[in-house]
Amino acid sequence: MKSELSTWYDRVTRSACFVCRIVEGRPLFPNPRIVYEDDSVIAFLNQFPSQEGYTIVCPKRHDERFEMDLSLEEWAHLQRVVRDLARAVADATGAMRMYIASLGSPERNAHLHIHVCPCPAGTPFEKQQFAAMDLRGGQALLTLSDARLDELAGSIRQAMPA
Ligand SMILES: [Zn+2]
Image (tube, rainbow, N blue to C red; front, top):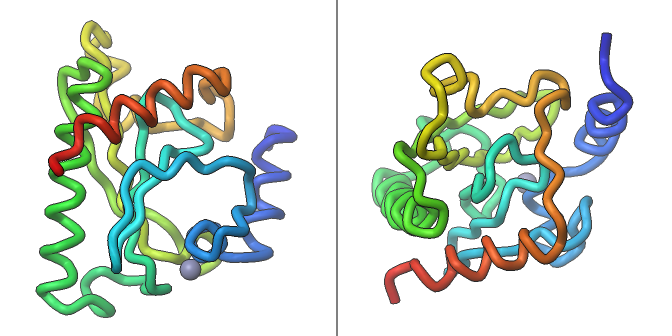
């Protein structure tokens, strides 16, 4: 059975592109905490994280498929930002491992976005890898205070290379 949160989330994310709305400065969910931005790439804290420091990295243009829509140069640039951010998140959180994934669906969250997910030090084996990223329909969602989210975003920004 679906949780109330996932039903609401499904409805909102079907109605508009959550990434384009952040790029346009009209986010679907308040205060996306942008941790990196340049002419073509934007990155922000996952607003529904399973881990502290879980970050999403996207091309600003509404591309949907990394293997079709991006030039090799655009993909390489995006991956450079992913690498730098993964280091910054590891720095900010003390993660023992960093995971990346490109998920999404034509039906919702179609805008290409790379998940950059820390696996905290001391995580037991059965809670690593896919389990570390899995929200299981909203069941494992972390509830972080605004102050903690601001602190994490600040640490990640500070750890990014100039
Ligand atoms: Zn979009």
